[in-house]
Length: 197
Image 1 (cartoon, rainbow, N blue to C red):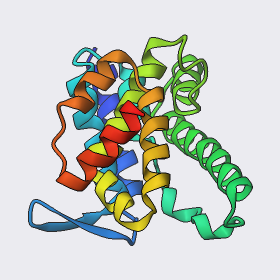
Image 2: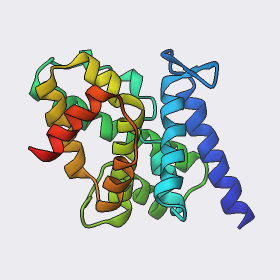
Image 3: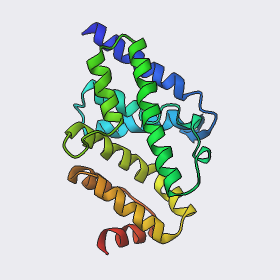
């Protein structure tokens, strides 16, 4: 058990070490912090709320969900729907491979590494409860921390579409958590449109 705990903590530290290299900064509790490190912390916090007894592979997948994301910028792909989908696919594979390399470095066995990769790649999402839990966490982190910034940059119709897609990705439990979030009036109006139209 001590070995497993040490290995787990080392992997989390390594994920955080890599994400702390993100040159993009955000203010968190009065201090500047690398954007992707903050995202990873928020993923862990939401996973604890959604699944307090989450397995170690699920915890590792949540913490490394966006690992080193800034190294593959959106602008490196065509700025259209096809380019966006290619970028997202490349990112998922990159995150899975980067996390796998760190887990191998920390002494994890191939089965655990494959499990973490499978979760990051969102394989069998609706059929795999842990994969669905991870997707719930991704959606909840977006809604709580990034949705209103997204809303400010896009037309209402696009925002409504994104909210609807996000809602449909979540389980009933994830949706219950989402309904408990607090938003501004404009956000609430667009969310109501997305869920009721």
